[in-house]
Image (cartoon, rainbow, N blue to C red; front, side):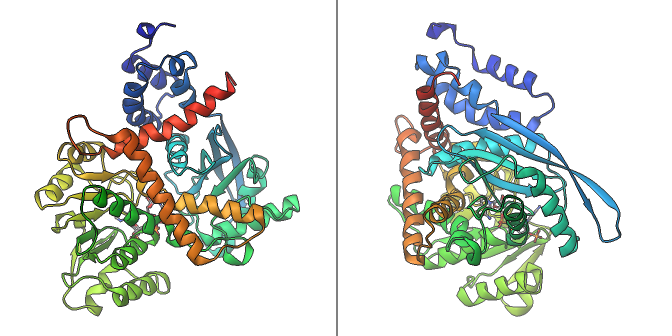
Length: 452
Ligand code: NDP
């Protein structure tokens, strides 16, 4: 096919829409990546001849299955489970399991598609996958969660394996659920292999995995700032969320000399103008985990702080922002406020926290904007290192893993620079850089395999 015969971008997207009716999240994710990739491959004949983008946007397979379990009142409950294996060109499928009532095939296909590029960016040999169920663990007893996890794994075990597909946790799937699922896998197969990551340290888990996403997002901000001749030292930072990613982001901001001033949860945010120091952070961690308390209680412990009910923290003036709570938590209006207040960098700890128009606004204002695909990839990178340790039957020490995390984040940043340059300016478009760098490695491997 001659270059001039290529289908146009909108024609390509029409095909995606037609083949995936009603799957809005998936179609949106394909559009976001393809906008950049289409431009990049416009003069590269072999990518067109071998239909690389068309093939990456078609999952290798989507497995859907019934999950039956019995609740504490002996009622039979039926849920649906899925595993989306998007692409294994550069390594076995890898990506989390999400247990949440909002889970649909479209959401998991979007996440598996995104994961393919994120994993490629880490430089580690991992393909892209994602899975989960519309099961809601909130409000369920431990025994109910255990029975559900066992039933889920009784089907999933046929489709995964330490060289095939290695799931991890995600929303609603933490250490407890991973433990139940790993136990069931071991029981069914009689094998102790690294089939899941995010495991407890006692049975094959990795040090630094828990901290990796939050720490990585701050390293990524530091890399972007240093590239622009700046640094984290002394920077006022606004952080959203108060879970795993947010609290570890605050910890790393403190290590690097920054001043975190906010945290939030689904009920509102706290602003501490004195800064959240190590002692206050420790209080938050204990309060959230041990007593399952709310972030609003912070103001009773620290009198100079204020709680802002039902609000998000983006109106607090800062130089660096870390959205670390959930998807679509930062809209265009809030992005405008951040820019007007002097924010120079945004590093996404969460997955897709910034709306598309918010991201465009950051790009136009030349804010250093690290998309989740790049900025929060530290978590999956440490999962990749958990796999390496399991294969080698070794457990690496803390320092070695901390160094690895730093190197991985620096490597991701370098890869973004390769393709993120903006003509006629020294600004870096990290969205474009991450989309193209993530694509190229997968595409080259697919070309090597021919049509399979
Ligand atoms: P946690 O469940 O530990 O924390 C989530 C935090 O976000 C909580 O403080 C929660 O508050 C808050 N939150 C949830 N929903 C809302 C909402 N609608 N509005 C405001 N705040 C909300 O999750 P993680 O920290 O692990 O994950 C956070 C994000 O990071 C997610 O997008 C996740 O997909 C992403 N991520 C996580 C990785 C990891 O390794 N953990 C890896 C890569 C990405 P509340 O307690 O009130 O619900």
